[in-house]
Image 1 (cartoon, one colour):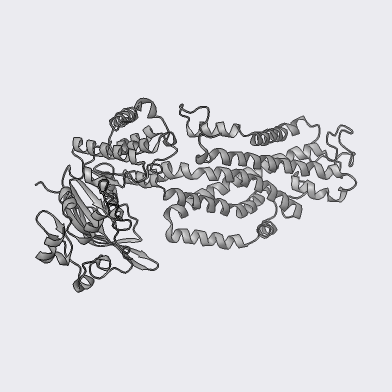
Image 2 (cartoon, helix red, strand yellow):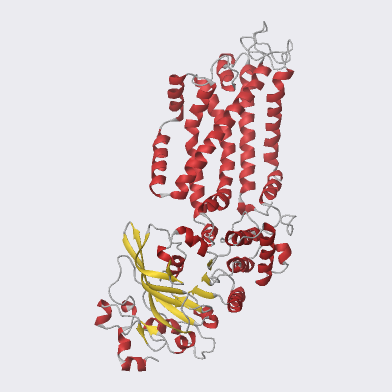
Length: 290
Length: 331
């Protein structure tokens, strides 16, 4: 199976891009995400309200009294709060993912490349760490340090770092034993260059895929924390906080629950769809195929 | 005769495993003269690859240890050469071709990039010059339309073309020794002959010594000057190629020769096989490693390791060869 461009040599990333954009489902995911990001950026600007502004319109439905998506039980504009919520979720998720990946690439890289007792130490520590339920870690961190922005980030990093570490370790171990790394060594290439130029680029693709799932996972975990009352708290406009606060109106005024709820679902779903598309596009075994 | 450039002297390699010490190499000796093509033949697990990898210091330590022996490269022991200097030698003076060309090239870089990288690791040339040299090398090994194909990725190359690219890479820095570790095993039979031909032609032209590792006697027969036969971590016989094929001395080599299918045999006979399988090297073996499979084994074979004795320009390890009558009856 050769793509229509066989004969012309495409660089690895050109090829990846081509295959990603050939995948309709991930394009839908990308579209949803773009719309949500635009909302997150411009929503608060176009809205006449701010997210913690109390108005006299308590629990009015969508498109009433100038509230596009209605108001909650304190009269706050849901549209503004949701758009702020998306922005908060994405910011937290991106920071958490960035830190998790940095930790994962360095720790996992060390464990995978050097092996031996270093690998044992890191791997056993991860095994031990994994036993602790992530909600418990959140409870512990937040009950000790409070629930400010960076503490929530810390709690999420503490529950997310080890999956990226394990993954990158496995990836490096696999690539390290491949013939072309051996061949590079036999060619007299320096160890640092082997790690950076030969192992790195080939071990990265699984990380990119996990990146997407870590972002989606962090968004969900953040909401779970908020819902359980150990993450962001009122009046922070977090999607989890909004879902948690709307529980009492689920039967009378379902929109108060369903709007932030469906935005949360769409947000994570779109990212997971993109991740799926990336996984297929980045798989070197699929190169040249459509 | 000139001084050998590579002299493997009584090499021993052990691997420490959780089950105990595996004595993979138990005294391998080998000499290579400049420009000479020597075949290293043996079945899987006989230690051919470990010997070759040891020359380049590519066997991971641990688990490997080198209790005895030397690998002399132009008089310097490579086993005690620091990693820094070894890196200069790897790819520069000694280069290597691997068995599977499908996996020996990095999928994320172009073929040209990988050949240039090799050149630039060892020579001070510009990126542009290295690229030109890469094209030149590809033309030399017979890659058609090298100017265009230099920017192709490995997945756009067939197996034979990739192996050509590997040869181009290996020869790009004008090495004095080329180690080819089963260079044709992963290829189609028709391509095998071409690849061997290219290796031989370029090696002869450029006066490169070649250590050709294989388990295929047909491959070595045509190109090698001398052949060393390896069994269970020891060189058991060493001879110029014609003499080895005409008159193998050691019963193992003898069995190997009889196991080659012959196209011209008229009578439909069963192909000869050597009974049994190579011994487990865990913990080492007493006596001749081949004794348990040998039809001619005597008591002494089980307990005393035979020396690699000289038989006028060739050598073999067998107690029975000390008997004149045994030698005469061999063939």
